[in-house]
Length: 231
Image (cartoon, rainbow, N blue to C red):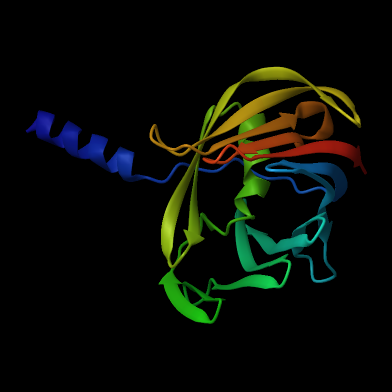
């Protein structure tokens, strides 16, 4: 009987959600060089900005452009009981004359998120701890600063919950146009069979701001961000 009780308790402990590290949001504006190495190399610029709005909520926005392409992505979040709660997520991508848009609206009182992606709406039940495709990036620096080496985030994506996994794999000295920084290297874990590789470097001396990002696509195309300046 004791053994059965211990097993039951162990299963219950495994099912409990991992508590996120408390997040202290601070406004910033960071400018990055944006380079795509494909059939031809394309250079551009990207801006990440976190600011507090008049109603006390926060907005993280990302704007990236290169030649005839432009991407704008933003999330609005609030904080409750030391947790980040996304309120709304917007995404717009334009490449030449092709456009893609996505909008997510989180209703925490009703317990669901609704979206309209390219005129294909869906609704899904949510609970605190669930993120959108940008808000989890506000949680990552706090988790890395707390010493976590395995990071896991539940993200509302495509009408279902997806688990985004990351691993802290080491520290590097990173050269950027903004200077040289000691940074934690974090790798996206998509599984052994994935041919896409994503690496992100976070600098403790800049409050764990991203100073470098690299993504290699299955076709060999490489996308790189390097910090140019931060305020």
